[in-house]
Image 1: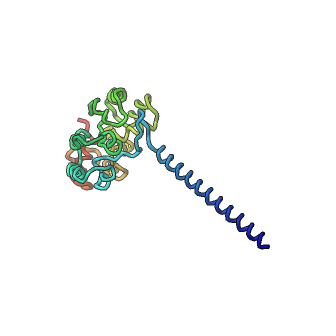
Image 2 (image 1 turned 45 degrees about the vertical axis):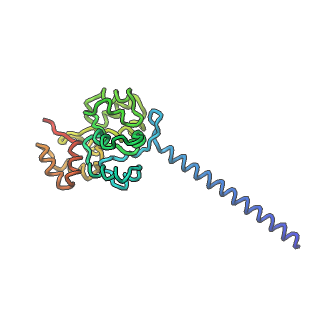
Image 3 (image 1 turned 120 degrees about the vertical axis):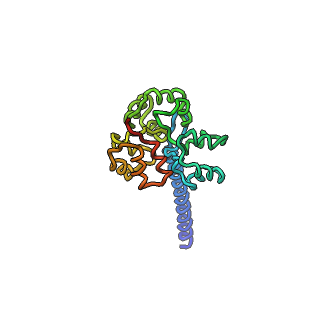
Length: 231
């Protein structure tokens, strides 16, 4: 009887060990799969792997800036200088910061598609001479849909959406569609409603007065660069 009990005990221990090993292997496979899935969430543009979400430097908080690896000294400078009227201003503030290409994968000030110099588009990670030329070729842009259509001739939908992290189409305050207003950097449903609420606008001064009821002077200056009025 004791021999039978001993044999059963050994078999039980062997089974438990085997089960634990299998669970460990499964956990490792799951972790590897999750890491692969997280990595696949990034966008690859012209051989450059870039996170889907790109932080707008004008909306960044101190915590955001720490997360992208900025020093305390640089963080203070960025917060003080917000809002940047252009990516060129942000780039100049950073000075000789090492590896700007890597930094710009995480943080940027979106370019105005209708006014940015062709050469400046190449600051966008993964954008070379050819794509910078195509961005400039189809001006003037009147809507995000137009950008999607024209640039979609050269790249797939995922890459077009990736580019929209880095560019915007300025909107005409009295005629822009709800969709195009919401496509502006940092403009959501609430602010889109306020933009539309005060139509028709007769001057930019009216825009400043009405929208200034909801945001501070810095945010108002940021929003103002995204819109225009037909003369």
